[in-house]
Length: 349
Image 1 (cartoon, rainbow, N blue to C red):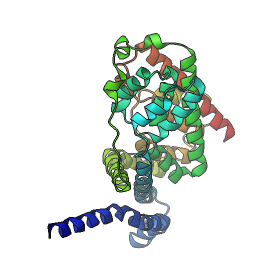
Image 2: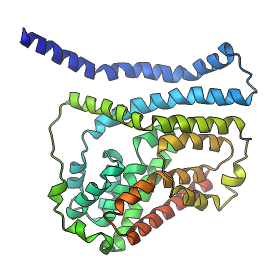
Image 3: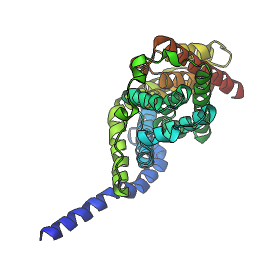
């Protein structure tokens, strides 16, 4: 009797693991018919005036909110499964013994796939340095991991299309690779705190566990719950502010402030963005509205990169393991790369 109950419970658990896969087709259908549904609700049911600014605000908010959450849920779930194959410990081992430039390229690529949060910056940094991984390679990872995350790419894809998302990912990787290579060539290991070299790398190794595919599905669902529970308020706030800009800011108003003709807009955007702290979910809907009102794409993306890639909390935490001169060098090199990318985007578009 107990064996039968246990078998039934295991079957139920196995079935529950596949429920997210069964829901994905429904999410896709809702996504593609969302705009029609919102238009019907706003114009046919609420009977709102199409020429009203308030109507534009409400329509923007009702359309973008479910759109963003559907995109995030589906993609974060899939990426969560993929990321279960790339633990920080495996990443550290993969980068051991790699030469500078090849290591920079590999570190930047792994930074996109490896689970990373600000709180893990110190153990990752120490583990990398103590394993003999060059300092520049370590910084390539630290730049790529927060900047080119699935949230940023999903929102860029959903709101601006695959070309913008691909350009952002490509230039972000380029910034991570070149910034790490420049820092590595500067030979500034003396600016790492002395106590870091006194710690054995083994102290920061995480035990590897063999997990089944069902566990990986659970990891994907856990990633969805964890990420959305942390950023939903930023999403709502960002979309609300973006809706207000979309509805009430006059057309081309931002051209004089963040347009191509304002050459100083890119460095100013980076200068303002570096000390700020936000995430992609909160800032991308605002950028969408700003672009609609005349802001240049390069200026907007430079601002976003500086906020996400050079977050103040990460700098504060890294101060525990590196000295202030290295933090200044790190910020300066990455910020310079972002400014160049901003000008390049403005020139191309």
